[in-house]
Length: 366
Image (cartoon, rainbow, N blue to C red; front, side, top):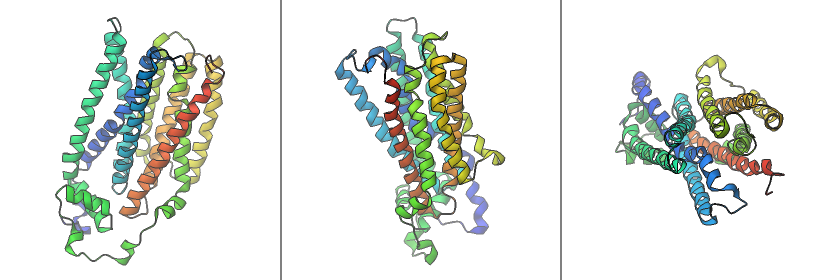
C-alpha cells in the first residue's frame, strides 16, 4: 500500500462508517468479561454473604474468584491500552466509538443479567444457572471480537491509510502491525522523512504536557469506582424493588454512561477547555456526601437519580479527555499518549476499588 497524498485524501474516508462500527464492537468486547464479573454481584453475595469476612461459601472458591477477577483486570488493561494507542492516531470518532462500546458492554451485561435472572428465577439453583449462561454468552462474544480485530479491521481502507501515515511518521509498532497484516510499508522503500517528522517527544515530555488530562482520568475513575458497584450493593438498604434494586441501579448507571459517550459528537456540547475539564472533574466529588446521605435518608428514586448522574458524567468526561488529548501530535506521540492515559485511567480504577472498602467501615464484621 502507498500512502495517499493530499489529492487522494477523500479516499481515506472509505470504510469510515464500518470502522466506527467495528471500534464500537471491539470496545464492547474488550470490557464484556469485566462487566460480567461486576454485574453478577448478586450471585457473589449469595455465595459469600459478607465477602471474605465470614468464610461462608468457602475460602478456596473465594480465592479463585479473586484470582480470576485479577486476570480479567490485567487482560483488560492490556487490551484497552493497545486499542486506545492504536486509535489515537486515527480520527477522534474512532476513539469515541470505542469508548461508547466500553459503556455498551456494561449496558449489555446489565440487560442480559436481568433477562437471565427472570428466565431462571423460579428454577432450582436458578441464580447459578443464569450466571453460567450469562458467562457463556460473554465468552462467545469475546472470541468473535478477536477474529474481527485480527482479520477484518486491518483490511479497511481508512485503517490502512492511518496506519501507513503513522508508520511514515516513525511509529515502529504501527510498522509491525502493517507487516503482520501483509501491507507493504513505505518505510521499507527508502522514503525520505522530513526532519521535523523525526522529532519525537519522550514519554516524560508527553506526560508533563498532558499532566492535567492524566489527572482528570485518574480522578474520574477514583470517584466512580469508589461508588460503583460495591457501594450500590452494600449501602443502599432495603426498598420496594427488593433483590432487583441493585440490578436496577447498575443498569441505570450503565445506560446513562453509554448515552453520555455520544454527547461529545454534538460539537456545541463538547467540553474542549482543559481548565473546564479540571473544574468539572473536581466538582464530581460532591457526589460522595450526596450518596452517603441519600443511602441513609433518601428513598430509591433519589438513589436512582444519583446513580444515573454518576454514569452520565463518567462517560461524557472520559470521551472529552480522550478525543482532546491526541490533537497536535504525530502518530508515534499519539500512540504513546493513548497508552499513557489508559495507564492513569486504570490507576484510578485500582485506587477507586481500594477506596470502595471505606464504605464498609462501621458495618457488621468490620
